Length: 213
Image 1 (cartoon, rainbow, N blue to C red):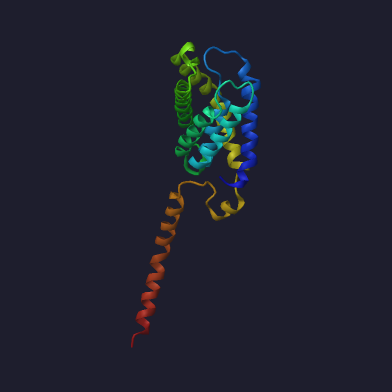
Image 2 (image 1 turned 60 degrees about the vertical axis):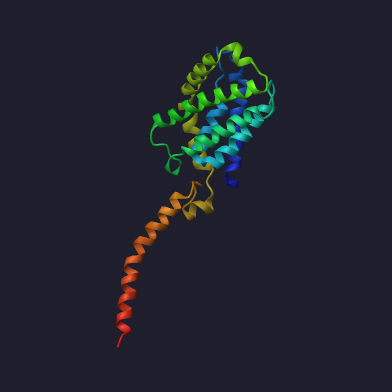
């Protein structure tokens, strides 16, 4: 992840953590708690790509593990958000610009279900049986509902801020600001080569024929 994106990412993650702990964590809603940090990680991952999403997810999850009133093993939520950030980054749209709301909501829905199941699975491995008492099905359904209701207000804003303030001027001038898997750079190279090979080749041939006696 580029250095220009670190301050923007830090502000968004800290703001999401504050809302998660001080607002949504105290609402006492039935079932799961609305996961603002997950929405922030998904939004940034869909702009930064899989590597950036993985790093953002790990940092956000680790902060949530350390922030009071955390009652689970340190690293548990970091692992979950790290994997969610990587997976969401793999689904990053072209140039980090989401073309439809429905595709973004599908990514959020998949992340909400997968993160809840993975968190419960890791908890079962370390001896945390809280999901068993509440009901795993209820947790998954409520997490899906809450995250989908908040996603239209959080994810587009996070993606917009990530694109606008997380740009690297040097990389943007070079035309490779999004940090994707390299397919865009390869296609640009091929297009440029194909466009320039024809005239130059004909010119070399004409010059070669002109030199013959």
